[in-house]
Each structure stands twice: as C-alpha cells, then as structure tokens.
Length: 215
Image 1 (tube, rainbow, N blue to C red):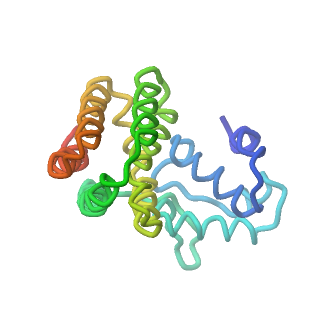
Image 2: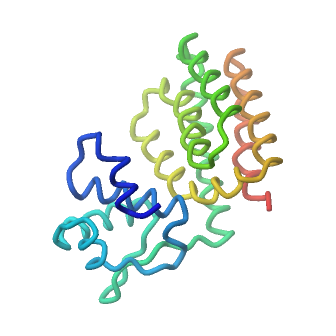
C-alpha cells in the first residue's frame, strides 16, 4: 500500500490538508511503510499529494509533536527511532497517567461503558490484522478512561499510545503476546465492573509495564 492508497481510505472524513497528510503519514509510519530513521523528503511527499511543501511541513510538525517524526535543522525530517529504554520510559509514564485515569473513572463507569468495553474485547478476539487490533486496543482503554472527565489527561495518554503504537503492532503479531494481553484486558474489565480500584490499578500497572519486558 502506498500513500495514495492510504489517502483514499482516509478521505471520507472532513480534514484540512495538513491534517489529512498527517493522518496518511502517521498510518504509513505505524504500518511500517516508512521505517525507523527513514528520511521523509518534503518535496516528494508534496508531489504525491499534489500540494505545496507548506501543508506537508505543517503535517510533519504535528507528527513531531506526537513523537513519530524528528525534524532536523537544515536536514529535513526522519521517522523517529525509540530505543528500548525510551519505550520503557514511555510505559512508565503511561502507567502513572493511566492508573490515575482509571481510578478517577471507575466510580463513574456506567453499565453502557462496561458493555461497550466488553464488545471491543470481543471484536479484538475476532480481529486478525495488527492495525485493527491496535485501533481496538486504544478504543478499549479510552472507553475505560473517558468517564474520568479529564480531557487533558486523556489527550496525554493518547499521544503516548501513538508514540509506541508501531511497537505494540509488532508485539500483537505474536500470538502468545496477544493471548496474554487479552487475558489481562478481561481481568482489568472485571475489576472495573466490580468497582475494585486497587485491583484495577495493580492489573493495569502490570499490563503496561510488562509490555517493555516482552521480546
């Protein structure tokens, strides 16, 4: 799949040109079409989209803010590379933020929220593509955190998920990882259903941090 194919898939939603380009480039990075450390030439990207370099530059700045792209003075842009230590650090930050979110959310979770989360997990049980699994994984966590009513906190968590999404997709391609991850998801959901904040925090910490330890 090339950039034009990705753009065609994303076109139905209304987006500004920089947002659309950012969406396409983001998905290309997450799918591995653009590899870690690969140069992103603004003139080539602009030519593919039939636009000037200005919206491409704005899109690259968006992706830089998300941690997916590194902009170099006078050297253009490259796909960011995360070391194992950096991935571990992101997971440690996620652990702190996400356990806060789930503690705030549990008292406000409705039966509808819990049923939606279970439906997402059941969809993950049926999914086979890494991209779909990663999307559903975020939707599951976001469903449990959104009732906390902390939009800034949720935004920070989402950015961190984007940072490591490509690594999560690689992990999800391994059957044993997905099986363990899903088991942990169901355990977390059960703790939330029982309004057991301590158990939910314990399970969530283990779920997040253990990702850094899996080969």
